[in-house]
Image 1 (cartoon, rainbow, N blue to C red):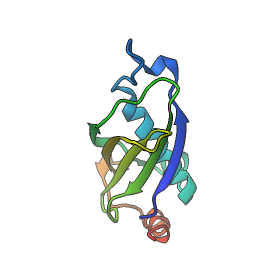
Image 2: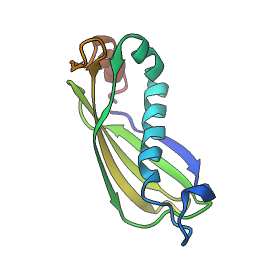
Image 3: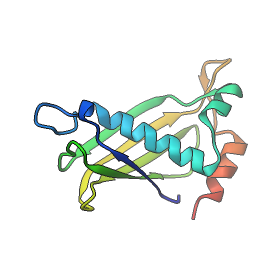
Length: 135
């Protein structure tokens, strides 16, 4: 699927005493990038929830290669790993302003029917939008 990049600057509150980004912030960075990927494709979390569809995270993997530091400008490259079924898998690469790869990650989310509180297949309208952004 087409990658999307999202930029953000590391805030002081996201760092530890060494001015490195605390590991807990990477889940937030991945979420920001994932939502921007979906938004740019034309998919809204808000509209999905209004249609009775939730998309909870069921797995989150992070591999740290180098630390991100206070005031770094990060570029997060986000892609969908494969065509979604009942789950959708996003991959992430985080680079600093020197274009050094700092972190990689992957999140798996599951489509859930909010009325039944059960997993469901990716809705056809969402799948169609994702397939349009395949190449």
